[in-house]
Image 1 (tube, rainbow, N blue to C red):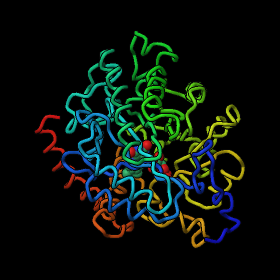
Image 2 (cartoon, rainbow, N blue to C red):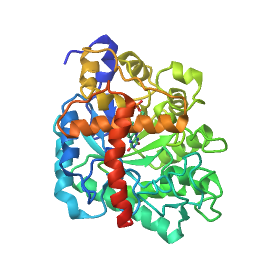
Image 3 (tube, rainbow, N blue to C red):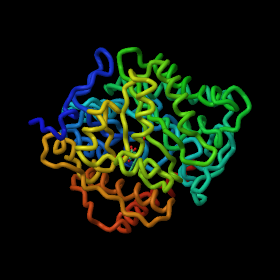
Image 4 (cartoon, rainbow, N blue to C red):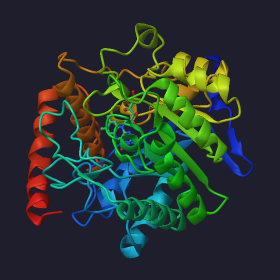
Length: 415
Ligand SMILES: Cc1cc2nc3c(=O)[nH]c(=O)nc-3n(C[C@H](O)[C@H](O)[C@H](O)COP(=O)(O)O)c2cc1C
């Protein structure tokens, strides 16, 4: 691969710490594949998809969210890892991801209240507060007991340990986008008065406990990262100042990489849907670059990945060359242009052409974005190429036909 000026900084290897090196600065952000088998093991379709991505030049590939509890499903077709029952399958999945030279990290998650009622009829959460603005898709959650909180922490550690034994090079905690970790951090979602809520210190106790429990399980040699919101983009919610305090605490725990994102699925700033995203942010291509610069100024030694909005080699390269961030995360571009990382690196293309189609209605736009890109991943899982020019309505219909069927099936089983 020849180095072009436009992408020069993107070619540089990244040493997170001794022994943990990524070959370049382009990473695949987590994309929920909705492709697992009925028993929530990864299966062959997910492996086909990652085979398609494995040779595309990325330095790091992070899986879509893998759930830690089969009673708590965030999207139809989530992979769940609770025990060794699908171990051989996980080993093969990790091998495929790494086969082209990228590092393979698994993202692990618990959806808490952000779990569709068809999949998780009785969700659990820090407090019995329903997700606002989600049009009745999510049931009101039940408040977790302290014993259940401790059990979930142990589950995260167990899942992480199994994935590392299966051959993954690292673990990323999903601490963003309104799932359980975000819910604990949010003053709106977490209204507890015990040691797990009430003050900012208590609200961040859960994520810090996760980091310690997972590190104890996976040992010191593999990467442990977290994806965190800069803010939830909800009035009175988790904001940038508080996010920065959480980052300081995570850095003190010795995390290897912080990935910065933002928003929840009812206000999908991570997909650029939220109208309150600052105009300066939009102009800079990457949605959360201003916040990343704040983190960098405060914690210059903490490796940073930034995901959301990057499309041109120039903006990606500038973000790294300026020292603002270390790693560029790509999501939607990879679902429609699976070869784009290598092309950006060797200068064959100067930008991804992905452009969201917008109706202006926030919830509809958030869901259309997700379904349209999920359907593209399914095409690759079936050995076909993406079809980015198809009308969004076609993709949404394809999604509903397949996942409507799955949701009814799972709902009847009473997960
Ligand atoms: C279909 C789809 C599924 C996603 N699943 C996840 C996920 O499992 N975990 C996660 O942290 N982010 C998830 N995201 C968010 C992406 O990782 C990324 O933050 C977002 O797409 C913005 O980056 P982009 O502008 O490059 O697409 C998902 C996004 C899409 C479109």
